[in-house]
Length: 177
Image (cartoon, rainbow, N blue to C red; front, top):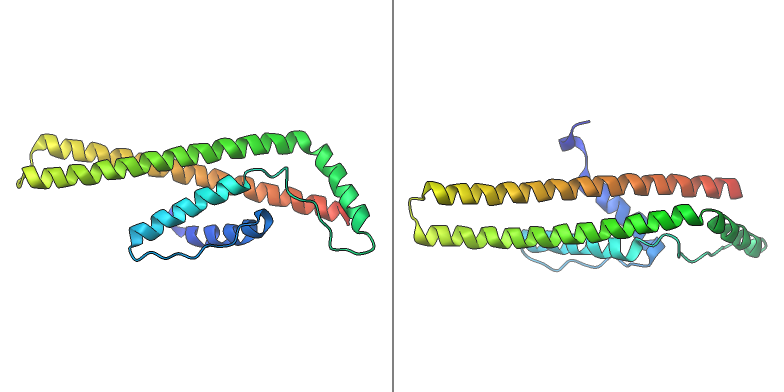
């Protein structure tokens, strides 16, 4: 499957729908008029979702079954204790990923701001453009493209880990029933 064929936005929307109820985040409404403002807002929402949902160990244990509710909760607590080392590692990994994504996002924002200021400066100082300025601009653009690529790779890894966690959860629930 090629990269262009992956419905990225659909995957992100589906992940949000799946994760938001589990970690108690209501979907905030977007109120921006520019596409860049909306994209930045979505990135901020994604980072907030990562921050809120990295701790998969301390999710409340509940049961909606009246008769077997206490037994189901007890079994889930036992399973949680058995999975504690794995879940704690995953929490640490999720936290590290969240910090990395946030750092990369901040760096990307700074690079974009620098690029915009350089473009304005170039347009103000040089109407025809010099080779040195063009080389600087290309360097900035290459750095931004590299950071965006890294962010996409991290998001892909996080999506894979989320899918694996959902499989494990489904298997645990299937074993409980």
